Length: 118
Ligand code: FES
Image (cartoon, rainbow, N blue to C red; front, side):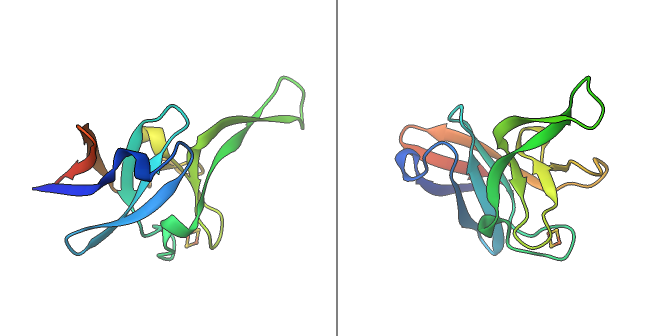
C-alpha cells in the first residue's frame, strides 16, 4: 500500500518527523545527504517516541587508547528517554547491540512527494 508522508521540502536534511502508516507510528529521517529513511517510532527498549529523539552522530575509537572522535553526523537516531542509538543507514540497527533494530520501511521520492510503501 502506498502512503504519502509529506512533500519533499517539508523535511530538511538533518530533520526528523513523525508520520502514520495507517495505525503504525513511524519516524521519517532525512540524513545530511538528502536521503529519506523510515523507521518505527517506538524504541525497542521501553517504547519511547523516537520522533522526539535526535539525529546525531556517534563516537568511534582512535588509535590512541581512551580517545574517540565524533563521526557520522546526522546518520544516528538517538532515543529521547535513555539514549539508545540506532543506525539510520543500516535498517535501524542498535549501535550497542546490532541483533536489535527498529523496524524499517521502504521510502521513495515520487515527484514532489515522500512515499512509504508497505
Ligand atoms: S526507551 Fe529508548 S532507550 Fe529506553
